[in-house]
Amino acid sequence: MAQGFLETTKLRLVFQTGMDDEGKPIIRSKTFSNVTKAATADQLYQAANALAGLTIDQLNKVERNDSSEIIG
Image (cartoon, rainbow, N blue to C red; front, side, top):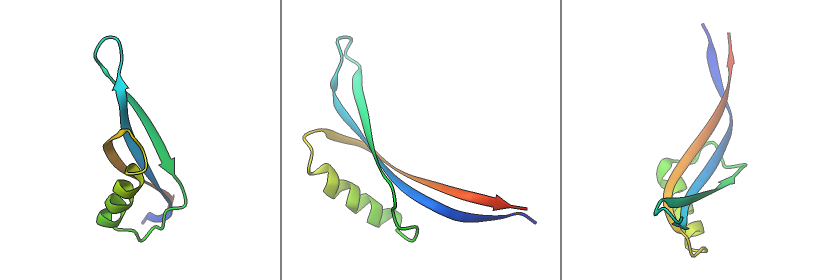
């Protein structure tokens, strides 16, 4: 049976930085590597909000990106 082993976790913050000429939102993101694998969703959300407080841009979305190795 195959098993998955969590290798890395990254935190991605997506910001709306403004609007373009057509009225569509301009989206930018910032990814933070070396996030502890044991971090809960609540802990990551709190960290994202703390980091977003250091910018003038509006936080649009918070993502957790996990990478796993699957061994068969």
